Amino acid sequence: MALQGLEDKSQVLTASVFWNFTWKDEIFRWDHYLEYKNISRLTVKASDVWVPEIYIVNSIKDMPIRSNGDNKEYVIVKSNGYVTWFPAKELQTSCSVDVSKYPFDTQACSIIMESWYHDNKSFFLHTIGSGIDLSGVHFVENGEWDILNLSAYPYQNRDYADNASAYSFYNRRSSGIFYKYK
Image (cartoon, rainbow, N blue to C red; front, side, top):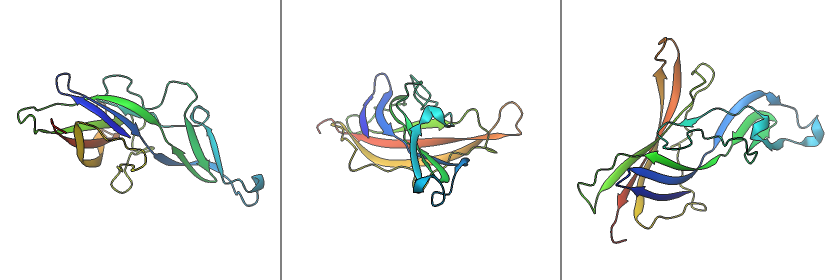
């Protein structure tokens, strides 16, 4: 939604983001034509259903994406079993900054998310399409930075303890170019 800034001295990227997570949960299937007065979709509190535990690994504060029980997050449950969660968050992540070409430097920062408590037999993070869209409606321009490229890379890592299971993580890489005189 917004790239607030990149502090070169502290090497911290600050951004407001809005995610769209979708999964299928067989518990939430119903025939909306025959049951429940043709209701095919419900909006319920995220605290009332299963929502994946996903963490921003390189966050410098507040690693979980899910908010801490304030009951302000919701999910959309559809009769076909698909559940969609739209968490929004202000992130502060670490980003290695190279100012050797200042004021015309280009920086590449990553936002790394992982699901620590689910192996890839039950849960897998992957992207749909490019995985990242800048919303023309919601995106707020930054006065110093332009975003040149956004790309997403889903990965699978082996479990360090037993090497028998794997878990997935997702690396969102964003690049911006700094214009001193913008």
